[in-house]
Every structure is written in structure tokens, then in C-alpha cells.
Length: 302
Image (tube, rainbow, N blue to C red; front, side, top):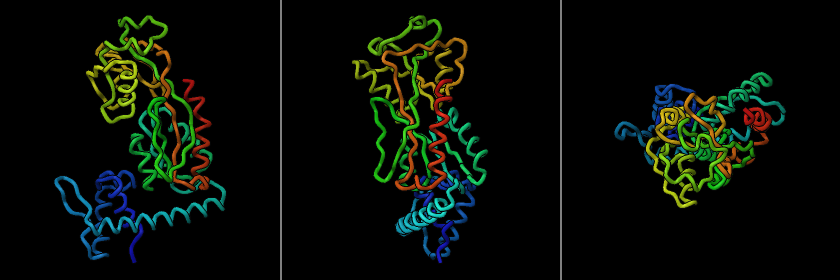
């Protein structure tokens, strides 16, 4: 008989792409995941992973087994949901993914609140970009994602994924203290054509939003520095190396040398909770979504 945990390990490697990433998602060590798959290979008398450069690739037989694993895991999830729904209390493990500024600015008080009120709930957070986390929800790799989109760049939700609004996060123009905009009460987007920008790398939602926004008013942004994390971007602005558009969530106090200037109109990004269709019957997901929404006003006012 096939072991479900070994199938789960193989499924995780398929979804996340590497043994290391699968281990992070499952809360195991990479060696533990490798051991689970090695046991599954012996159990099935089939080669499932082959070396490819520094990584691995799934064999054709592994892909067939992954499809079976996905069906079995979906059945188990439905059974767990039914049991938890009958008990009526949030319980069991709940895997949550959130983009970096939400993981920093919103999730800590939410997870602490859930842990205090529902000790039987084992919520586990992973920091993941929105364009990845939504797909992970759709594939069943995580239970709940906190993602965002912008006013001019809606986030597509794949079939079988439901969502609920959490709140709106405002975004400001950050400039060095000696910048000509530093004393302005507001700046229009049409005035941003000659700036040197610091921004997140291509492929990130905020980078794509900046390009679309400035191009919509006839400007091609001159992006001179890129960094993954907002605190790094703020530090680059403080050093006088450019200007940046930074959301307020998780930003923290601005360092000396940086001035916040509102844009007119003010950019807004929308935060959502996403889960697989029907999973909201599970009290753990329903309660986590309610807690996210309840904490948002206090977080967004900071």
C-alpha cells in the first residue's frame, strides 16, 4: 500500500520545483524529503527523481504518481474539513502564505491572536510572493494565501480558488530630504518623468505596477537600483540614490533623510485572502479570514 506521507513529499517536490523548497513548505529537512521519496521509489520499484544539473526532475512515472497523489490529498482534505466542520472549532495544521510586507506588518498579530484563542489550531506561515502563492493554493500546496493586487493590475484568481477582501493598503512616494518634491503637499503622476527610481526586480507585482502607472501618463521609468525588500529600497532613498513608491503596510518608521509625499491620486493596493473552493467550510480557514479582516483597521492606521 502506498504511504500517504511519501506521496505528499513527491507532490510537494512537483509543486515547488526542488527538494529544498518542498522541505520548507512541509516543515521538514531536505534530507527527510529525500528519504521519503527514496522509500517511495523502493515501495513502487520505480525511479521517480533524476539528477538534472544541481537539481532534480520528475520522471514520467513520477508525474503519473503526482496526479494520483493530488487526488488522494484532495480526498483527505475533504475528510479533514468535514470532521473539523462537525466539531465547529478551528483545529489542525493550517499552512498560510503571505507576501513579505504582509508577513511582517499583518500576520504576526493575527497569528498570535489565533494561537491565544484557538490552541488546537497549528497555523504555519511561509513568506511567498503573490504571483506564486495563488498558484500554490490552486495546486493544494498551501491552505490559505494573503496576496495583493494594484488598482490598475488586478490579480487573476484561477478556477477553483475563492477569495475575500481584507483591506486597502495606501502607497506613498518616498524622496530624499533634499529632493525638490520634499516640501510638496502632493505630487501628480505626470510630474514623475525625470526621476531615478529604486524598485523591486522585474516580475514582482510592485515593479509591474510602477511600469504600468508611469507608462499610462507617458513616462518610461529610469529604474537604477532594484532590491527584493522594501527596507532596502527605503535605505537607498535615504542615501539619495533615487525615489520609490512604497506601500505603508509593514514599512515601519522612516529613517532620517527620507520624506513621504502623497501622490495624487493616491495609489492603492488591495489585500485578499484566498483558499480552495469549498474550503471555507473548514472553521480554521473561516476564522483566520475573519481574524485577518478584524486586525486590518488597526494595522492600516499605523
